[in-house]
Image (cartoon, rainbow, N blue to C red; front, top):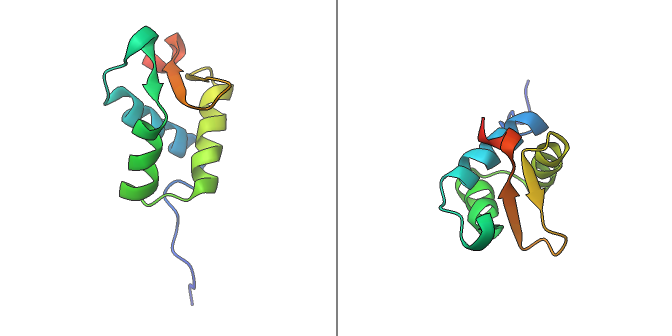
Length: 84
């Protein structure tokens, strides 16, 4: 008997790739900035991911040098490696 549902974004790499899809969907504003709510809203509410999956995805994207998160946490920038 299976009591839980498999989470599609439990793997941090899958979560990071989905976050990158959301980040690329928006035109960056001033200086290449993408406001964080443009990626966390769709990921959490449309994709039904959990905050833990979101955090793991962001950390994975940062570690892979796909995203740069501003120290204030209000925006991200797609880095060169994240364009692939």
